[in-house]
Image (cartoon, rainbow, N blue to C red; front, side, top):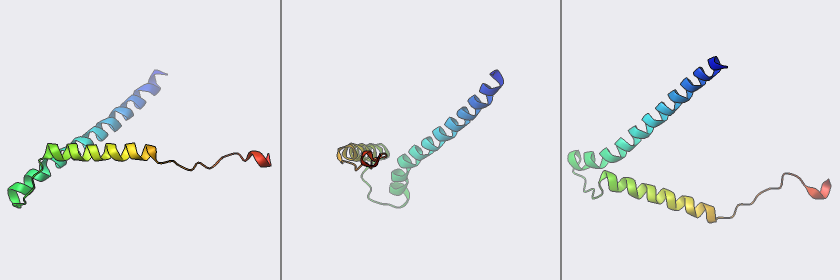
Length: 83
């Protein structure tokens, strides 16, 4: 049984490492894009990377909260009338 848990643990560790790396890369890009636009393209960009990140997270949270309020039509899996 011990030989089974070692490959599973290694797989989960590798998967979590890849996910964390991609998340860190995404956060780095979100924070650097406004700075690069301001420095190299002379774009009048007034939001910094951190404030842009906060704005995106607030928008995502608001969308998630609104989706909870929208009623969903659920199809019954068992029709009681025909049983």
